[in-house]
Amino acid sequence: MIRLILLYFIAFFLAFLGFVAVELFVKVYVAIFYGGGFGWDIRDTKFVIVNGTLMGLVFSVLATVAWVRNRR
Image (cartoon, rainbow, N blue to C red):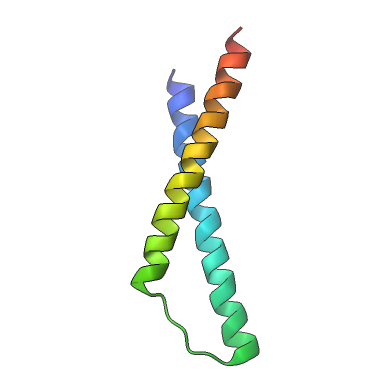
């Protein structure tokens, strides 16, 4: 059971990390190629939190399905 909870934490961490990486890549890309001085906005934080939570939820469902299949 502890492994499943740890798997949930890893799923949410990877989801948040993925969306942070996308946001940072876009900011760096725009700054390099377009010379824009874009900063981290509250909308970016909201994007990462909302989409990271949704993706973490999807990963958690997949982790639960994998866990149940392996227990049989």
